[in-house]
Length: 338
Ligand code: TRP
Ligand code: SF4
Image (cartoon, rainbow, N blue to C red; front, side, top):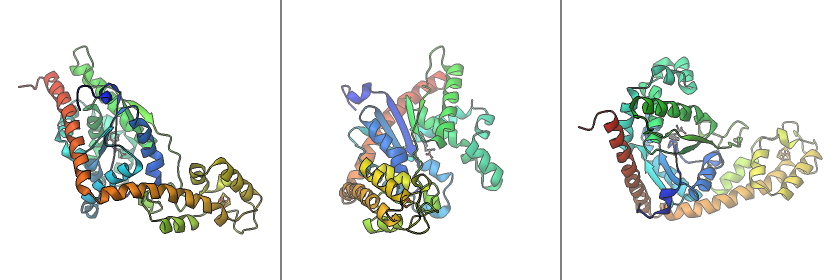
């Protein structure tokens, strides 16, 4: 980044995602859409949290990690994340995060990490598969955030506790080592409205439930998935009236259909004037249209993997410059600059 780069005066936001495989509509509407908005107005750092993925990955997942990392970056680019406006990088390429994590660990009370709900649940359920890495998960996340002095972190509700602990870690560090002025920035949480999109079985869309529509699913795959998606159970037969508010398909409809279509569908549903397959048709087309746009962008990157590696390379070096500077300050404040 050069000195007169306009992004330098924009507030910095940072967010990360674990590479768990092809992104789906839940990721797009729950996170990426928000990232797209932010990239126009903020200095955005978006990274692949591959270390965090190791805390939950099974050994068989690890064989696919590299593919998942690059598939995810391609999904970001396909959605319209612009590498010229944002800094894209990979966590494991930044040992600086691990150094800050170690330094922060020395002053973080164990109880702060033990009380994080995700840790408590896991430790309660299966203590034997609860790793030290999982306990450290939120602190590593704190290091990810604090090393860039991010002003804000766009995350879903499930991550809010982690950003909260990040604020506490920063506050404590500043208190212990700040010598009157805050060295680390307490980040704001930018809570993403997670329109809870239902998956194909009516539960929350999630890869682990196997109920997701991938951003790059083929048109016929999407059509089949929507066609077989459950609807309002009271519309068992075509002649029975239904209620869109009870229908798992409806939140998707609201995302993809214009007012007139929604009106037609709601009215047709309540009066039993249309069948569920009629109702789903415009939705299928809406999703397919968006997927076509994503696939088109993805295809240009898939045809040119070197370009994707280069984008990550540039982002990683950009991020590293910022991370190194913060670490120098932190080391000095802790009396470690010898
Ligand atoms: N824990 C986040 C998740 O699972 C990913 C993540 C890691 C992250 N480090 C971060 C998100 C820093 C925001 C900021 O979704
Ligand atoms: Fe759902 Fe549409 Fe069927 Fe009503 S008509 S139950 S909204 S799919």
